[in-house]
Amino acid sequence: MVTADAGTTRLEAELAALAGSVPDPELPVLTLGELGVVRGVRMHEDGHAEVTLTPTYTGCPAIEAMSADIERALTGHGIPEVRVTTVLAPAWSTDDISAEGRRKLAEFGIAPPRPHAAGGPVPLTLSVRCPNCGSTDTELLSRFSSTACKALRRCTACREPFDHFKEL
Amino acid sequence: MTGTDTTDTARLTGATAAAALALGDDALILSHRLGEWAGHAPVLEEEVALANIALDLLGQARILLSLVGDEDELAFLREERSFRNLQLVEQPNGDFAHTIARQLYFSFYQHEVYGELARGDGPFAPLAAKAVKETAYHRDHAEQWTLRLGDGTEESRSRMRAALDALWKFTGEMFQPVDGLDGLDPAALEQRWLAALTGVLDRAGLDLPQGPRTGAWAAGAGRQGLHTESFGRMVAEMQHLHRSHPGASW
Image 1 (spheres, rainbow over the protein chains, first blue to last red):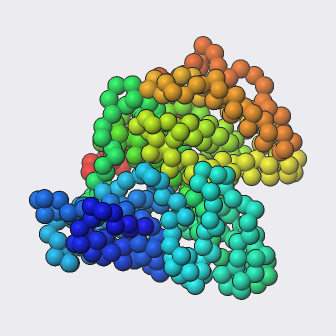
Image 2 (tube, rainbow over the protein chains, first blue to last red):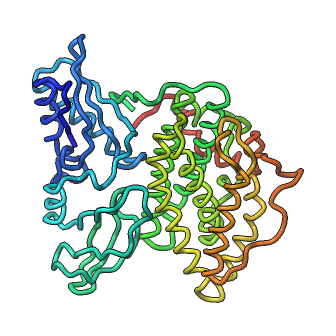
Image 3 (cartoon, rainbow over the protein chains, first blue to last red):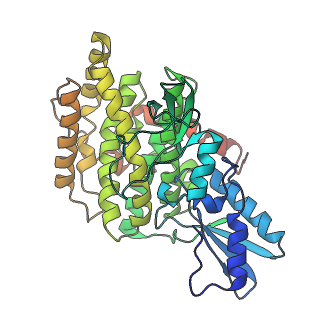
């Protein structure tokens, strides 16, 4: 989530909003802001903008495409030099996905992550709703799917397989 | 990574650097082994699962090796004797049961280690806090397969038992003290690991393997740079592209 703290200038807030509006390279229905991976933008005295980004998974290959897309968006806005820095702490969690992001995921056919207590065990008890027919009668096919952040499930009501943005 | 700087990767030195190398090499080597399943896994879902686990491990390895030096140089230009990974993670994939037994032993260990490091405030805490959430899924994957194979057919049970027995001798090394990870109590770690493992094996209808796990032949061998025979071939394959075409990129 992009939060404007007290030390943020108007330009920085504007650039953070711009960086947050960049679509996710793997889930283009979501913006990076909705995904909750843009941590902030800071203008340095030498005129370069530093964008801090946090990865969803440590090995997520999309982080490089995200960096390039953010650089392109900000340089297109007239910022001569943009540096994207990745930070690990505090660790990203699926709880950082905004309500709007969750709504878009479901609309796109991906079951959004269930909320969970940080540091708790992998939640397997709460049911996952089928994004196609809305049934809660769904089963896990594999904890791993087409990208690091998703699990593969099947709806036992409408029989459609679907991706579930798994809790992290 | 072009265009991407990393702030929280100020280089480490001394014992802490050695610890980063040990943990990073574990992740790198197991990642490579799991990657060898691409195109060979028994079902498509498993191919995807093993590749996903490999990807998580590779991400962890990149961060850990970058704490020590240039990640590419460390991965592709070191000689076999300079790698500090556990002998367990370099063991060949074998049949699917061997891969699962290796995952079971290692992911339970790695999850405990990251959990412990995440609770501290050392240089590994940011990575560990992130990675421990990933390894929870790796552990769960290994556990589910152990239950399925152990409690499956006669064939699957005997293969799982054989795999657990064959890799058992490599598990003692995980609980040798590692310089730079002084906050970790190897004996306590081992107890938690054994308790968790015993629980899973019990539910799978399998016995905890018997036999020595440490000894003169194996005392911390991988961490000292001594590796088993198949490791040389694995490293050769892992490094040949970079060595043949220095600086090659996609």
